[in-house]
Amino acid sequence: MKTNIRVSRKKPESLTRQIRDQLSTLIESGTLAAGSLLPSERELANSLKVARNVVRGAYEQLMAFGTVQSEGRKGRRVRPAGAKKKATKTTKKKK
Image (cartoon, rainbow, N blue to C red; front, side):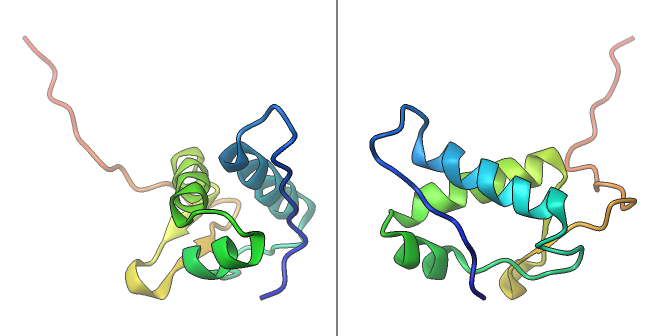
């Protein structure tokens, strides 16, 4: 998958934030449609010449926002607009 993501080490924002913001913009604009498979962490990290954990951080933030969903070894997909985010932890109320 070809993405138009660019990072600059000269910007004050972290590389993770730059990647996250650009992916978010691509998703919101419809360039990355709902259900689209995102590039693998390794693939995107290699193309941007950044460490893999930088891309992983951006993907994890997008997952926390509910924009992206993980499908295990298949990778990560853009979450459909109306899809509900699965609860990751349940908390018990103290009485």
